Length: 432
Image (cartoon, rainbow, N blue to C red):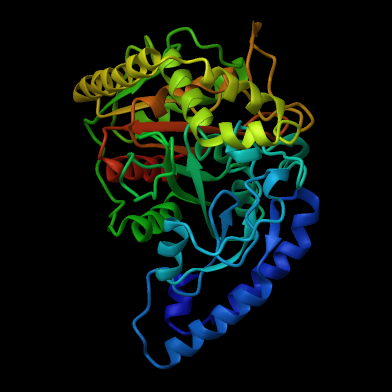
């Protein structure tokens, strides 16, 4: 699409109008797009075509439509954070990511749905309701970048942005049969908010690894050649993630992909890093971050914040300075442990999610393979164990259940080797 626009075989105006038409057709079924920027987008598309006619230098995303997650500040476009507290908020500035996307030439059509303040991996809120899985509208699309994943799957936009603390780029991608890439922390610049964590990232989502890499290059000011020979490359294959329960159907579909990596010439061996302390470390740092960022808002609006988030903020308020410091030191130790592990194996492959897409009216799964889940984040360990180790990771579609629900596979690589992760994901996608 970008190539056609550059070659003047397709105009930005035609592209934007076609995607608005698709939003009108598809969005009522799935509720992925929550706020439209119709007039502004059409104005920018006209300006993009006029600039191209004058041979003005073009950005890498010139003329491409996109939509921003409703956690991103968008100047002049409503930004609710999925919360009743901000349901009418219109920022007077753009976030750093939005600035970079705009300067690269993309045109924002809309905002995509997210759970309240991005908390949890199920996309629903009191402002806009739930976003539904396009493969089965009775199921969740995951989250917190759920609206983005669904908008991509339904061809309402060609590229999208998401955020990822505990799996918010990867989990909805896996649930919706698209690609979600979590870069190495710091690889895409983020304007940090008070209380933000060093392993909280922003990154691209797309319908293919090639499109995701294309968008990543624009965000990170990089160039990622995707072709690579993987013969002889050592890949660690997951076992049980230290005893984390996984739905047998997810396990079966994920493990069936081992032969694909072997067909690429990879040396695939069962091995996994030591996850001791990952759970407690992630929870402590997450709860503290929620308390710092949202404690004041929750105190002023006690009846407007969802119960799970109120609970998390309360947990954060009970932490001591020693608790927080110990968790920070543990996170550094976990990152070093993962680095040591990936000195032997270049990549680690595991499931994206521990469960299949579940009922859209259920806030979070209460049980996995006979093991009870006690909190709203318990079922996300296969993602947040990787987050806390601060490595790049990608969710790539790998199959469907007999009833047609998507399953994703997660590929993790060495910190800083975003290119390698994208390359292996691309090779897998082609061979799969």
